[in-house]
Image 1: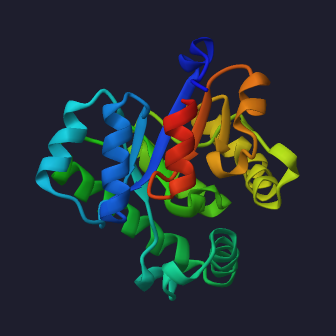
Image 2 (image 1 turned 30 degrees about the vertical axis):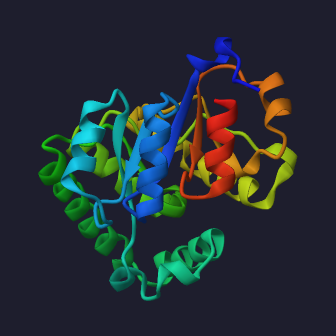
Length: 234
């Protein structure tokens, strides 16, 4: 079933994790060639070739920086920790060690500078691996860097769509509510709705009750279920 054309102009398909693996790069580039992708989140400390960089620059997609926190800053290997378990650990660090947010700010600034060096321009937007920038102290860091580098877009969403009341969706929505004041104060530009593709069980049902306004759908093309859903429905 092909995605209904009346919704397409309100949809932002964001492919996260470019650079995290050759498969992620390959699948993202394929979906990009089909016109399925609107934004690409690049992990600047990942692996990609100069040809892949040129391909992204020639595309019509927005190229965002997909911020991450290194092992050195987080104190543990990320690959062995689940999304929200890792987020809980980082949240604890932010309260126990006030210097942690400052270290993250320094690291994220280095990542933005590296992005500029690689792509020859500033990022079109900000997102983050495992959505860590939704943590309130780190959200303020992201807003600060967005202003400093004049980055026009940040992943946030005026509403986080929570199908089936999934725990991860509820947590992210709660974090978004905590960040609303900071977002309004910074007058940040984002989509009206935000959802993670893996939260959508029945895609056809979701499309038949599509939210009003712009909808950013974050996906990980390296994963087969996300790759297939984007290819088939969007």
